[in-house]
Amino acid sequence: MPASGPSSNKATPNITTPRLQLVPITPESLTSEQNSDGKLGEILHCRITSEWPHADWEPHVLQLLQQRFAEDPTDIGWHRYILLPATAIQPATLIGSVGGFRWPDDPHAAEIGYAILPEFRLHGYALEATKAMIHWIETTGSANRIFAHTFPHLTGSIRILEHCGFTLEGPGKEENTIRYRRN
Image: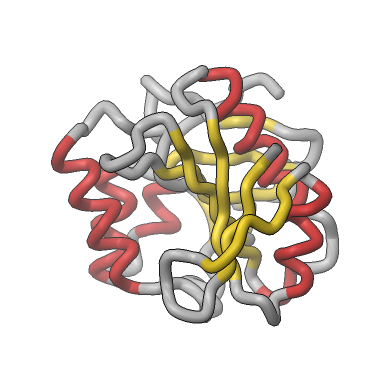
């Protein structure tokens, strides 16, 4: 899946799939989101619904991403991509996010995560975005293991992971989570 299309960051182009544009977040877009200043849509050239950020988003993740950008400002492309439908209707509506994250204590592994806003679920967007992110991680060659955490009751999330070649590895890092690893 080639990287192409207009991007919010010249150094890291968007990832394009048949139905999605994955736009890399930048320190500017992350700060706007964290501050809830209403400028995120302007920065990303998209429409933001009132459902954003999604209910499963944990605020401490924004702080963690800001910390990672502070440590390495060139690390754009890792962390998180905003999902926009590849449509002629403009501005496109932000429908979710996907990302890969490298933990400092295990630099050869990548954790993947994704979320789709409720009104856009059950259309295959999470699967398409997850496959694109896995492809990006594998083609960069910067991680030789990919894993994900989810909750046991999120059967849709588990199906996506299994469809992408992940298998249950055991308990997750956070309480009540389970860990999946890509074979």
